Length: 381
Image 1 (cartoon, rainbow, N blue to C red):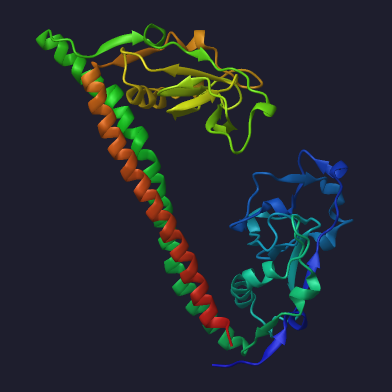
Image 2 (tube, rainbow, N blue to C red; image 1 turned 30 degrees about the vertical axis):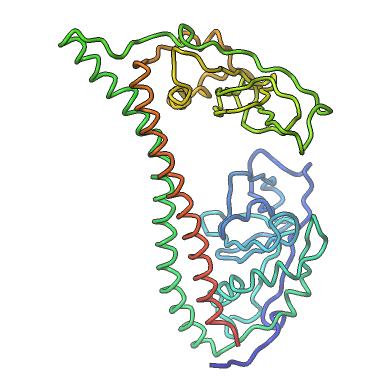
């Protein structure tokens, strides 16, 4: 059905917030909603700052109301929409965040407006200007036309949308739970192998006298070598070999330090992070590295180190790991043949987890497209 249209500015006003200065921030008081607090259609209070409660009377017009619809007007989050809840009030509205104020509630239902703005999100982004730091003009948003059926019909459309989008929301929730479960599969299997299974094997040894797994100190088996510094002038994007930092690939270079299988362990910064390396590569001075040895399978070592959770041993203001401190960690060590079996099992599980995660990515895009399709059907003339 075709409905009469009006410019958004005829039924709402896009009000901006106040330019509070950082000198007015307080350790407590009234939360200030900034552009970085608009996240996934809700207000994220993790990076909140506060304004002294004494300012409440002076800036009363910038206090938010329950279920206010907000939009990021500039910066990396431009076009993001969010709604504030009664549990998050009182709160001030900061500059660069816009609030949609309904002029006449008999002309437009607030829920109808919310769903229309969700439908408009891409159009809002396209209207942004300014390149690296995009900005949205309030006048451009207010000039956008909105189909405006009678208020009763608006509420019927909202009820229908809530029913359909509620199913998508539930599907997203199930998808998120599946993603979390997939992320937990590898740690759970590592725990089973290196704790429960090891305990069972030790019990079998006690009963039968056969020794298969040994208990060793980390330093008895592995040598953690220091990485070596590599200046920026010795790196290039077109370099043949990978340069590794504490948290994985740092860049490339035509120089290499190691040729062969190895494990990189973050020493400073992202201390304890594990990266498996192969071929020719350069581990920098913020890392430790180990190389192949007849005492262990390098793939087994990777999974063992993942299980040991080295980041928990990082200390200091700038977290770092002292190899002498972790050399004393007790580790279970099966024979090489058993190590290779464990690697085969864990590699197979890792591949299945990767496939599951890739599938979840595609379903996420499908759900987003379906949501936009439903909104489009409701609002396109």
